[in-house]
Image (cartoon, rainbow, N blue to C red; front, side):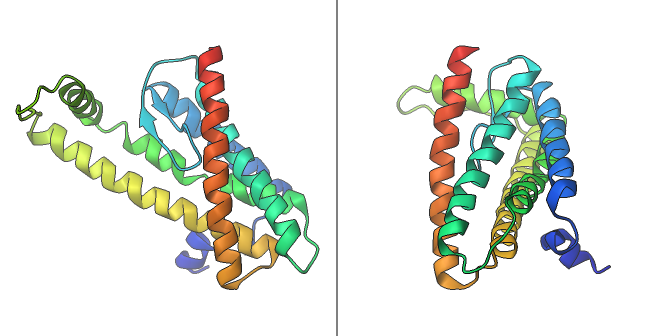
Length: 203
């Protein structure tokens, strides 16, 4: 099996209940790793270091992110697709498309990343006009920027997988499909932020 198709187009081989199980497992693992470090996947495309909470909150955030996008794209696919498709295939492959969040959660375990993040937040929130913030250097700074690059790369990778899932399962291509996907991504991002905000307030 060639590596590139496996990494960016796995849905030709894995779909349905299998992809759903693997995807939900990945979402759960990412949430549990994040719970140990206060790492929130608090939006379809968002990840932030934040407050500590029960482990289930972190898992629930990932599930909310998944279901918001999957349902929006399912509705969009029903509207623009000229062929029938199974909902389980789209739901499952959208869950599996989130597996790069596991890599993001693991990368954020790098020593120094959280120390630099905390120092950055502290310097920005308590910054006085005209004062240049002082931040840690050396290993902490290197860890922070390397992890940031990994996070950005994995996010782009995840979006590519989300698009491949939508395109393959709904059998849609071209500019119209891309535009619908982008709009769906934005709508799902808003929905997920609203639902996660409500969840956080309830904790």
